[in-house]
Length: 61
Image (cartoon, rainbow, N blue to C red; front, side, top):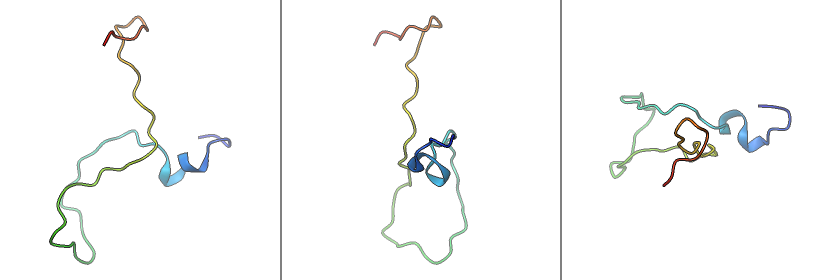
């Protein structure tokens, strides 16, 4: 990131390049019994590049 990088794209809010699965993390306190599902980070990651055929031209949809 550069000096001109907006605050909302830096530090803990910076785009994340890795996607990982983590299980059995330690928990301090207790989770509500009704809690079900997963946590997905909702952040400012840029959209992936369009698929190409190696020519630099977008793949037809």
